[in-house]
Amino acid sequence: MYNFFVDSENKQSGCYFISGPDYNHIKNVLRMRIGESFLVSSNGKSDLCEIEAFSEEKVIAKIIEENYKNTNLPIKIHLFQGLPKSEKMELIIQKAVELGAEEIIPVEMSRSVVKLDDKKKKSKTARWQAISESAAKQSKRNSVPVVSDVISFKEALKKAAELDILLVPYENKNGMEATREALSEIKSGMSVGILIGPEGGFDEAEIEAALNIGCKVISLGSRILRTETAAIAAISMCMLYSEMYLGGEEI
Image (tube, rainbow, N blue to C red; front, side, top):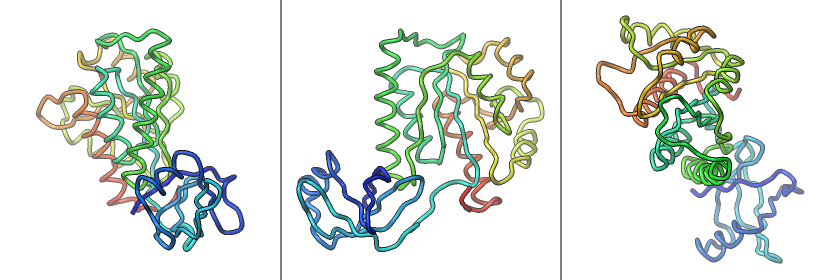
């Protein structure tokens, strides 16, 4: 079933009025017809709708069932991703969105290979946000996760300090026991930050700074993972734990 994101101002009298690129996509690309159903997501919720009519470059979609499906996790995951090469970042964003991340924050770290000027940062952010929206549609998310502007490591720690829990996969002598302990502290409604290093890994000073704000060091297993794999694995752990033990209630 297709999913489209629509501003709440386009909802009137039990219908959504869909225009612009989505109108063209529904009518001319997907060739959908009156009576066909799809999801419309707005304000973090999804409604089941069916096409009632096509009028004046708009699709009139009648709401059949409100709050049709809640795909939100019972926690909010914020991924702080050490800036990797472009194609890797695109993969990370796509998979992070599919797995339920609430926000992806690209972070310039000491060992980041990629260095972006202000102009490139803006164009990259726009591109990454488009990837987030596409992945949100594909995975039937109720909302589109935000890809923030690229920030410094110092700015990332300041933002991360406001969250309930911050996790960082790094060398840990306690292995998976440390991961189990950290996950057990996560409760429904919490904001969880995950800090992932770039291709070159973390600088020791960065790890020390993260520990100083209460970051919990976890393990992702006995193997060495690439940055994109580490991000996916860490989010998957949090997603699986929250879905299994915290339920899928709306937060």
